[in-house]
Image (cartoon, rainbow, N blue to C red):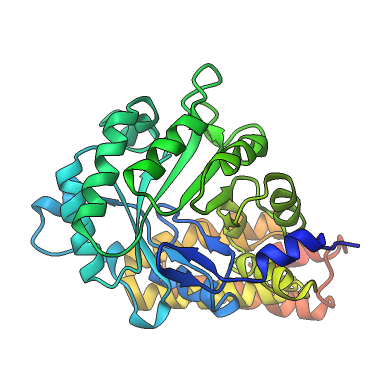
Length: 354
């Protein structure tokens, strides 16, 4: 039976303090490019009312030259606590962007120093800053001087197995003024392959006085608890585990606060959430929202026989009505078959109904 150690329970019973800002949850929703828009955050917030949300990462250089802020920076005043994540390698541009973020309603400003994608790192942003710790520290100092809200950093354990510098890098970020550090337990070279090395998160936690948030391989409540026990981190950040599953942050938060496991959603409930997600994206972004919804809908369609064929249909949806019709037919069939997850006879029925 899953349980928390008394020491962990005591630590998690208090609010998470990020500088002078308090968050009533130790579970955070990670910023995810192309995912954590206003619509997605609203769904996560429904099940995790106290958790910190993050926008998709925003290019500070792009902000410097635009007259109108990008849609990914749009924040609903009702969705606090909220952080806007920025990336770049120019301290002055990041300071300017941070001021814009605060004006938009950000409770904290997060600086991305962990993204492994080539188009980000080749321009000096994301995890490439792990190789330029002095520049990274200059960035933090500039942003801290520019805004009154807490400034936080999200990074990785190093550039590669031969260049793991998580401890030294984290210390520099704290010295420069960062008031929380989120550490993904992989190197840049790993990307999202292999396992997250939580032991490095524990090593960083030992030397920092600011909160350390563990990130990487948090796909379940059980994984979150195990990670917290192993690392002694001050909280966990859920990332890929929330793709097609906006319930995860709330499930982890509920367990950490009560010691009780929340009943997971049934396949029908997941598809009903996919339906709502599709509708909301269309209302928010129009046809572009439909195209973006394809990946979300396929992520929701798992855990029952016939799900693979259903994903194939959802991945090529062209209109709102088409997507709603496919999901509605699947929901009706799941209701007919009693919401089963292993009954093979549902597979051909789902396919033929499409």
